[in-house]
Image 1: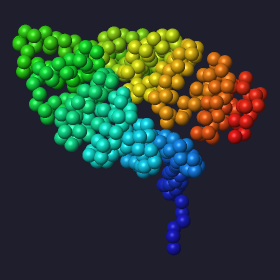
Image 2 (image 1 turned 45 degrees about the horizontal axis):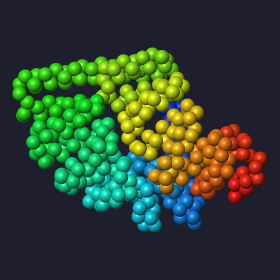
Image 3 (image 1 turned 180 degrees about the vertical axis):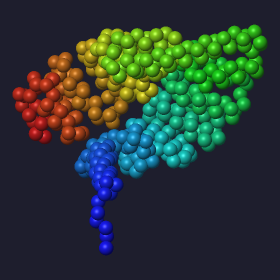
Image 4 (image 1 turned 60 degrees about the horizontal axis):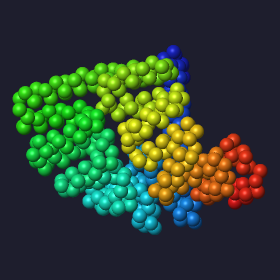
Length: 391
């Protein structure tokens, strides 16, 4: 027979077991809910457009991009393959496929996709970065150097390009002085980071005279000290932001930038501080000077710039930038909705309605946004607006 006597220990064990079971169920539910909204729902939304290839591919591309952002690049291949079989030059799909193939160490095939993307999208620095990485892994060091040089030409503020270049130079055994001049470009642009200046100091031992090396050593010591002090200020900035003390946060960030103008994170922080304080004219001016440090993706960087023009009510310039983006990125169909808003703001209702119609065609969920957005109140009574909503 079982002893059914409940002493205090048994009660505690039973209560603990029940609590853990409930917590386990709650955590599992939270995980599945998160997974549903992050993964399964976007795919479900894409599949409903399967009968309209151009719309289907647009949603599949967004889903594949989401998977890569969630650090699931290999899973994205299945959906990118569907797109590329129908349209081998789909904008940025070859790039994402190259990233996915690199993640599974299939560098030979990744290189082919990335080379195709350079023809279709020649001013995206990260395309050349991943191409350089693939060439390096394939022992094609001269090609790797050419690609990383192009990546740096397009955006010299992406630290990872310099780290990759260091690995490439180690294989090429280039003259130390020639290699040093390559990295000095980062110093001139104020985008040095510690591993790079340590590497430069090592190179200088092989060709600089003692007195010049001593002078350079003082430069590096100054960089080191300023970097450490700027990091302390960065921590203070983050603490001030956490308590919404924006005045202090701005003061700490500016002091950090003065000490260490090489730190991209400080630029990103200061940008957010200006926006949080609604200092839109200052934010626009700062972003125009520093956008390549703040955002390394050209499409995302330009979209942010459009936001800043909108914050400052410079709608015609924002519209011009957005139209340029739409021409440059013909598969970025999400641009139709903001284009509709911008055209409405400048009083061109016919063009506004045309873009809203296209926005709903490519994504039915936009209909809800159109109906709820108070910025479109002036259009709602028109017959054309009602037809768009019913279509």
